[in-house]
Amino acid sequence: MILNRRRILAAALAAPLRATAQSTPVAPIPLEARVGALRLSPEPAPETPIWGFNGVCPGPILRARKDVEFGVRLLNRLQQPMALHFQGLRIANGMDGAAGLTREAVAPGGDFDYRFTPVDSGFYWYRPSAFPFAAEQAARGLRGMLIVDESAPPPVDLDLPLMIADWRLDDRHEIAGPFPDPAAMAGEGRVGDIVTTNGKAIPLSIEQRPGARTRLRLLNACNARLIALIFQNMRPLVVAIDGQPCDPFEPARMILPMGPGARFEVMVDLPAGDAPAAAIKLRGGGLRADPGGEPDRDLVTFAVKGDPVAAKPPIAGLGLNPRLPTEIKLQNARRLDIAIEGPFPATSAIWRLNGAMAADRPLFTARRNQPVALGFINKTPVAQSIHVHGHVMRILHLLDDGWEPYWRDTILVGPGKTARVAFVADNPGKWLIDSTILEHSAGGLRGWFEVA
Image (cartoon, rainbow, N blue to C red; front, top):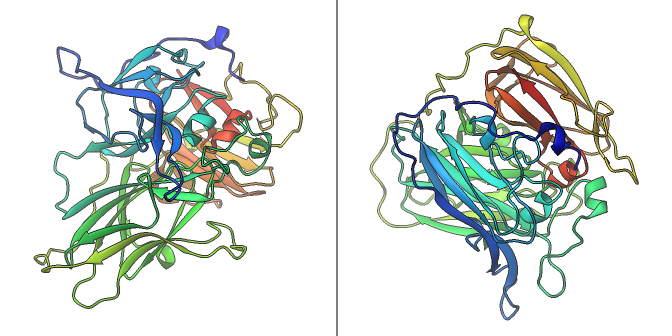
């Protein structure tokens, strides 16, 4: 791997962002990474052997509370080292799961307790993060969702977390290799032809009463698939992105673009009376301008039956996070452009950040609470999905005249394009910048920065 463990191995590097008042540790929830089975092909084909948390995929939905200590015990029953990353959570550095940067990965047969106190409510997920193994581990099914509940959640008739995943099988209905896959590492990443929602073949059918208010928590847990979701016969309002609330808005043309690891929370009132059936469709071709003849497919369908629910007031937002700044003082920012380069064939680093083949040194350092402005310049022929650990970012307008009115932990950068972001470096420690296209991260697309 590109990170030099002997130089940068460390334990937890900083205290949690917010101390907990509990006097005794909470009992950790066990997550056992082990072999399981999942019905991915219709009968009479056999079930597919997978790797899952507690033997299932998705793994258990974890629910935590803001400002209350939470614990997860990873029990590694695989023959590979592994670590857990809780994507989007602003937690103490040592709990981020950056194997080789903040601590060693959990060895086969070993276990480790991840303990943290969430400072933000929201919708997150947990996934493998020990490279080069993480891409295979996720492709075989090691993925799960995590929800940090608000103190007063908005009233809804249905709270529905939905994990979208894809799978590539061989003619024996087993997960297809090879691992590592040089073609996926040097190309667009691993994309499977079988799509599931919450581990079930699509479409997933949901039955609700007319007018039922539904909170959809949508996660793209694919290794590399760039998704576009189409909302049919409903008017969704986006109320949170990547775990952070935003001012509610309707998606442009009723389509949501989702790169790997992206999360959107959507509130919608289902149709009443004799209205046409509502559905969420998976756009053929995803985010490609030319779908290449791939048809749209139903992802989730809503069967509206029974008596209508009582009328509700208009959908309101979740309320913006008061722990995030209302503005970022860019005039004081630490500024840096980061070139994404590659692919470089027959090298140990197929992808590079600012020409570096190794990450023995940080890409940059920042003082605690210093604003940071980064430009990601994609010099590669494929889309890149860049994740900044431990922080959330504003997407800057390219004319430097403002930013988008929401926060992200990951940003998509098209081939030959540039994207600019800003954040406040308020979380001390050593933090990864890597790709959520896990084959790219395994191929070298990762570096780190330090907040002193």
